Structures are given as structure tokens and as C-alpha cells.
Image (cartoon, rainbow, N blue to C red):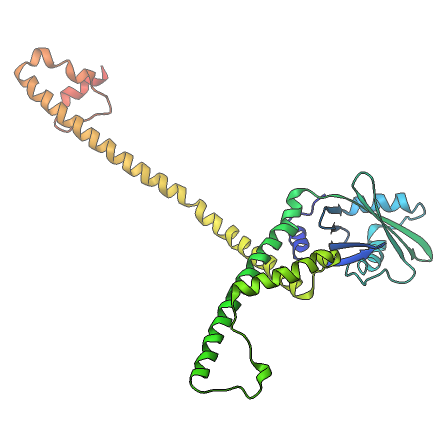
Length: 316
């Protein structure tokens, strides 16, 4: 069950945190409401999720704890206190004597088992995480990461331009006789292509050899992720507020079309009036033969030039 509305927005604003459970390195994000929760886990190869409402939590708690007869609110706060430290970071662990373990199942699901103590009795809980839909993975992870990469690339380009201007400034000082007081402060002229090739040749093999670093989301990246998500939510709200205004435009277009069509009807009626006038002029020459012409005309046409006795014939 996927959270909707405010719950989905709250989950999206949660950061991805590196966690370690049973020796398994993962990225996790979680949202806990009053009596509902939604968690996401990923090892960069797959994304798992589980979303539970109050009724589902009550049912599973009864299955795992036969002697438990308390409502959800009575034990859900205890569950949050025990599991949230485990999902808060790689160094986090369950409080007290609680135990947590993770198992990868053959069907591709992930099971997290938790054992703690509640009111002097053992309390058991299990998270049954299944592969998340592609849309959830894209919204929660792929799309924000792509925006982050574009933003960091623009930052690198601006920093490269700034270094170029700094080099020009230093060169101007040298040409005007300025010298360094300490030779160790002297730097080479920044060449972007040379720097990029050297950085890739040194940093890329090192990063690929350390797989655990691929799951590291440091504080700066978490802050950047939160800023991107917050900006996206603000833009979405603005679009939703502007949408009713845009929906009011079609009636204006219809009125424009109606007015234009009305103009064409008036012009066509004027043309038909001219034709009827011409026919009236011919009727003066041959009255006995041409009097049948007005009977064939449209009853909606009421030319002002006709005498009243001719209109009477239209209703016979």
C-alpha cells in the first residue's frame, strides 16, 4: 500500500541514509506516522519497500505475538523507538536488548526481523519488503540523483571558469612586478581538460574498487538531496495552483469562436438579404410567376425590405 497525499510527500523529503544490518550495506529511507509507516531499502541493484496501515499492523502483530491484545497505538510507539535507530545510519542499532537481522529470500524479497521487550514480555516484528515498482524507484531515487548530477556538473563548470579568471588576475599581478613571498604558494595555470583527465584516471579506479563508498550519502549530499526535493515540491504546488486559471481559458476561446461564427452568420444573412432584394426587383416585372420564390426561402430570414403581406405566405 503506497502512501498518498501528505504521506507520500513526507517520505520523499526523508533523506537516504547508509545502514548496515547483518553485514549488509544498504541505503534506507523511512517514514513513520501515528500508526502507519513506509520504508525503502536499496543496495543499488534493487529497491525494496513496505507500506503498512493501522489494520495491517494490527493483524501482523497478532500473528507474531499471540498474547498481544493491545491496540496499535499502545505498541507502535515502542516499535518506532526500537527500529528507527536501525534505519537512521550505518552506526545505528536497536535500543536496549533488541535484536535485528536481515535475510534475503529466494523469491527476491527482503525480510527484517526484530526482537525486543515490551512490558516485560518479548515483542516480535518483521518487515516484509518486496521489490518496489519502477515509478517508486524513479521518484524516490533516480530522478533526484539525476538532478543532483546536473547541478554538480554546473557547479564544476562555474568553478573552472572562476579558476581561469583567477589565473588571469595572478598573471596581471606578475606582469606589473608582483612576486610571491613564499615559493611554495606558487600554482600552475589551471587547464580544465588536463585536470579532468588526471582526475578520472586516478579517482575512478579507486571509487570502483571500494564498493562500500557507492552507498555513502554524506551530509553534503543529503542536504543537496533535501534541497532538490523541496524545490520540486514547491514547483509542483505552484503548478497545481495555476492550473485552475488555465482551465478557465477554453470558455474564452469558445466565446471568441461563437462571436466569429455569429459574424459569419450575420454576413451570410446580409448576403441572402441582397439576394432577396434582387429577387424582389425581378418580382416587380413578373409578379404572377415569381411570387412563389419567397415561399422557398428559409423562415428564419426576415428581410426588412419585404412588405408584411409577403411574410404571411411563409406560414401557410
